[in-house]
Image (cartoon, rainbow, N blue to C red; front, side, top):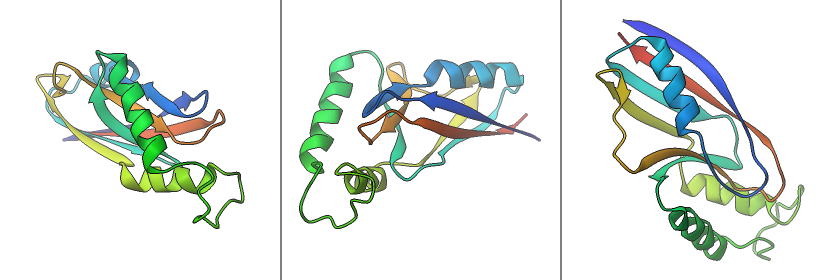
Length: 139
């Protein structure tokens, strides 16, 4: 049994979904492992991780529109506004999604479905550098 870790950097341009599938897949392929479990963990409270469709970009647009309606910026119910009107909504969006993902590694490939991709979901309006820790356990 082996373990490998790395940290992936994702520079966002503001709110939206950023596909990190290729970077993650390349790192897993370079590991030389054939069977195991990959865990991804984002080190932030105003961004999250998501597995979603990576074929039709309308899915990502609709996902963003849904969260814009569900947790609007500047909602007067929020008192935590230290970093702007998008600050607390970003924390709520992160709490409603995921900060870690686990994906099996089978026959040297991530067991993602045909249209599944891995995304950093940036919840803030301004650009940020996000860090995703990858941990691969297997052989």
